[in-house]
Image (cartoon, rainbow, N blue to C red; front, side):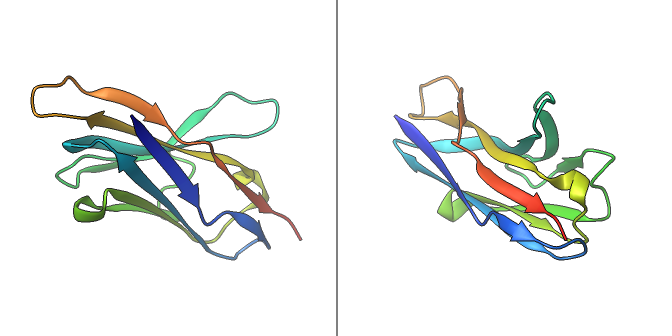
Length: 121
């Protein structure tokens, strides 16, 4: 089994920065894509940013130029650096990853439990 554990959320003011982390643990051979999603109250969960094992990234238009996703493959960890935060960034942020447990296993998709980010003055 694989667990994804997010950390780094909190309450910040508009314009502040936060760095989220997500560590994958358990039986892991390797991890393909790792992503951050978010879900605001009353809204659908949306993709914020994603990164492949090779480092290719993609972002939602709403966070481009403000957020940066990165990963440390040796630590099975993905990060989300969030700068110039806005009230509309308030949401629960979830980590998502495609993980292969063994060399012969198919990739399976996993979710973390989420971390709350609140941007308010």
